[in-house]
Image 1: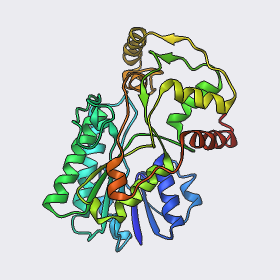
Image 2: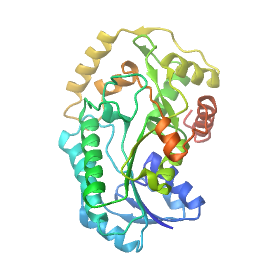
Image 3: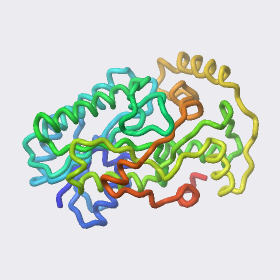
Image 4: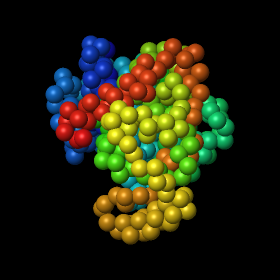
Length: 329
């Protein structure tokens, strides 16, 4: 089968491309010209350069990859806080619309849109599920949620075979964002903000890949939204202790008061506003410490047959071994 993956050079994208190739598919990787191509160059994938904000470049990718049957849409902007809000809308929302328009007449079997549990904002119930209210409280979450609604609109209006997954907190080999947490614990400089009793819901990257592929395979997935997460949520204390045990280190037990962390985040955001650097602490980073994240994955289990295969300890051990092999730790 011929498959197009947008955002193929990203953390999740590289894992997905590698898995699809292992399954015997022909994969077209749609990436920006400035993307880091080191790992993709080692894979037997056809690379097409373009930009999700440019509908024409998407159309060219579909034309180059004649008879594309499945599209996985992973391209997005996630973490930067020192860029304009308009960039989030240009990439996460308008970019999605460009893709949907380009795919209207492509005769696809499946179009899987990768969203995020971030569209839900502060959770109104624990655990939350797909029917729980969405109240995104930052520009990333709002832009991703509107992109979800748009994708579902195209599914209904134009009969595009769209399905949506909302991954929880993804970790695994190659992830530079999660690496910061592992590195801080390894160097014994990790400091807890708040009580440490906040819930987090990790999901190993290969389990997210499994969820993406299941969405593309099941006709029942069309027009549906699925939360993809690990088997269970854990407290921050449990997560940090698990990582520390695998590293055989002890972490400082000093806790930073929430009010002090919020003050520091406000100061850093103002100081770094006019630079091209990311502030060391900002309000969105505080969400990890302060907002409960716990999800019910029953729908993905029942509709798709999804089942997390990698438990937390195994996933952390595998991730740490990869970081060590790369000389990162």
